[in-house]
Every structure is written in C-alpha cells, then in structure tokens.
Length: 252
Image (cartoon, rainbow, N blue to C red; front, side, top):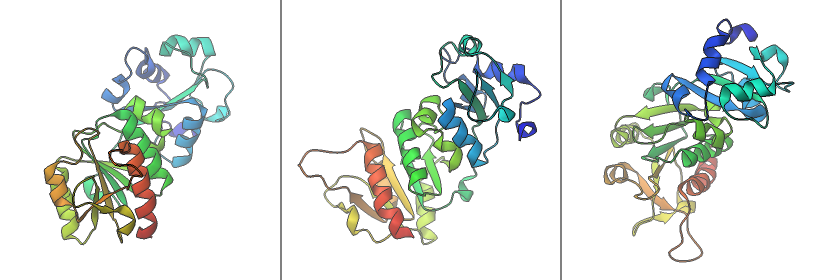
C-alpha cells in the first residue's frame, strides 16, 4: 500500500503542498490536490480505493504507520500547516473528476451551488444515500475545496464527481436517453416530492436564486419538500438530503 502513494518517494513535495495551509487553504486544489484532515477523513480515504498522494502523521495514528509517508511530531506538523490538528494526521489525494459521460445514476446535480459548506454537506448526504455521482455546473463550488472536503468528511473521495459546462444541455441529453430529472424548487407548479415516482437525477439550485430558468425547463418534474408553515424553507443541503432520501429509494 505504501508504495502506491503517488508522492511516497518525494516527501518534500508532499510537505510543500501542505505548507502554510492556514494562510493558503485553496493552494492544494490549485495544484490538483484535495486535503483530508484528521483520523476519520484519512481512514475513509484509505477505504475508498481513491489514489493517494501521501499521508503525513504528527504522532501515533490509528490509520496505521504502514500507510504513513512522512512521520513528524505534532509540533513539527503544526509548524508545516500553520495550525494544530486535533487528530494529527493529514493526507492529500488527486482532485479528479470523471468524464461527464461516465457520471452514473442516481445522481445529484448542482446548479450554481457556490457555497463550499453546502456542497460538502450535499456530497456527504449523497454518499450516505447511495448516489452514484455528483454533477456540478462550472459555477458551483468544487467538492474538493478544503472546506467542502471537511464538511463531507472526505465523502468526495467515495463518489464520482463530474463537471457540466452547460448543465441544462446535459440534463436535456439525459432526458432524451429516457432519464427522469427532478428539480427541487419552490414554485406555483411544484409537486410534493413524495408523489414523484422516480428520479434518475435530482437537481438543486443556488442558495439564493434557486434553479436557473434553463435548468428548470430541462427538468421532467419540479418538486418541493412541503413545509409545516408558509414562508419557511430549508437550506439547500437539507432539501437535497431529503430529496435524495425520498427519491433514491424509489430509484431502486
């Protein structure tokens, strides 16, 4: 396993990717890497079979010393990162998207969901609900941003991710192939999500603006999670989780 780490023979490169992470949290992604922080996220990364760039430990670690590429003390690791990790182990992995045509169903699609925390929460739910892929438009935040990875607990390493330059065009193509596309959006013609018979692709939109008109027009149905009180709505990640719970079970 250890020899399969991409940067096993270049520990200085591994440390350079992580150096001053507090001041430059998005630099690893700019270099093509995502960062898994702490025991839980690193253990999950190891379990997925996703390629690993390398693992740095700041002390004894339950992930197994045989997986560690660079061994430091907790103080030395804090000096590299610019902060102390509560669980002093950190890993980098390639931030790789699959080809759009390879994105499987059921899928969750993100229409300009630009908050990394929301994207991370959606990815975490998608993995838990058994979705096959997460497809995002180019205006959505990457699941491999540091904040998204932390929120998803490394879930981005266990699901296929893809980017659609034109999400509406891709959704129309999916419908032409017989796929059912359900957009989650509050509107006059929205139906109760519990009445949808099937969803191959669930689409959620921007936190403030919702689904764009082109994406709305590309959907087979528009559904809503009913609220107990008028004027109350859910955060996009919560609505996505409920939609995936309701519709992924019917998919199967």
